[in-house]
Every structure is written in C-alpha cells, then in structure tokens.
Image (cartoon, rainbow, N blue to C red; front, side, top):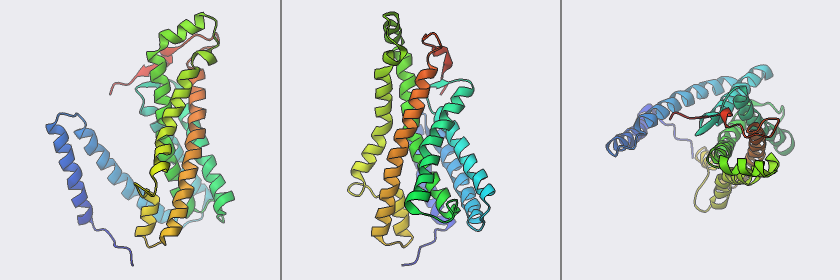
Length: 267
C-alpha cells in the first residue's frame, strides 16, 4: 500500500482540535492555553523547517554540514534540559551540565548504534544519523530533566536535613545520597514504563511511522526495540552524569550546601 500524503487541509483539521483544547483550558482556567498554542505553533514551524533541512541533508554527504546540524541539536537539547526545572542552576555550569549529560546520553549511544550495531557506511549518513540522534535526544532529555529537577527541588526542600547531617560530620556524598538515588529513579521510571507497555498498550512512534510508510511490521518492531533499548541505556547514563555533577555543584570545596547556585523559576 502506498503512503497517503497529508495535505495542508488535513493538518489544519488536527490543528482545530488543539485550538478547541486551548479554549477548553481557558474556560476551565487551567492557565496553559496560551502556552499550548505557542507550543503548537513552534512545533509546526520547527517540523516544517526540519523537513526541508532534512530533504537537503539527505542529498548531501558533507560531514562538516552534518556535524554542524548535530551540534545545534546538542546545544538546544542541553539548554532545554536546564530550562524545565523549578529550581534551576545558574551560571555557565548550568548549560555545561545539560550539554554534557546530553552528549553522554545521546551522542555516544548514537555512535555505538551506527558503528557497532547497525553498521552504517559511512557512519555519518544523515538518513540514519539525524533521525536516530533526534529520537535519542528527545527521549533521553525528558529523563535527564526529570532527574535534575528532582535533585534540585529535593535539595531545596530538604536543606535543613542535609545541613544537619553535615554538622554531624557526614560527608556531602552521604548527606545527599538518598536524594541523589531518588532523583535517578524518577528519571528512569518513564522509560521503564514505556518498555513495559510497548507492543501491548501502545505502538511507539518509530514503529508506527515505519508501518504507515509501508515497512513490514516485524522489521518495524525490530527497529523500535533497538530504539527503546538505546533510549533506556542513554537515559540511565545521562541521568547519572547529570545528577552526580549536579550534586557536586550543590556544595563548595568546604562541603557547605550552596543553594545560592540555584534560582527558582518564575513560571
């Protein structure tokens, strides 16, 4: 069966549904209607632009151009990880933690998948690199952001307990140990839930897209399984890196809790 091409009219019908939801949010005074419309508009522009960019990239083989695109993806992901927290890190360290954690969680895992598992030649082939990296960045970003948010929020709320343990002689590693473990658990729960229900309750996005595009269902299932396992590993590694660096950043060289390195978000 040939792929059915969606028209602008088809997309406008789905946009009307989001508009209705925003109006309902306004009537219920949920306070998210405006942000929902802005997010929908951003996704529309961004996806259409990336569609045109990918069409151009797929016809190219310039590793420097492809590298520039992946670098932009990494920097944006690193910023977004730190921008969704209730208590955000401040200063250059904030961007550094987010970018480094996404580098560990997505770029390294993508490279392993392309070179070792799939065996793409060349490994920077944009048809494989860009979609795979995008899926890993998008999914691991959520887990890393949740872990960091849980870490900073719990440290802020439990600062009295942490400082009491420090005064009793505990090392900072021990004083924040339980908070760090809980933060890591919170980041891993979403991907664990996704893996648990994949194929029974839901058909994940990549598998659905391949089936709609005409790929055999079994081949689509294999690729989706690969993606889920890579996301699980990437989320775990990225969350561990972010939480451990973030927890170190919460203390100074004299092992004093430094919550002045956090700033409460305005929204």
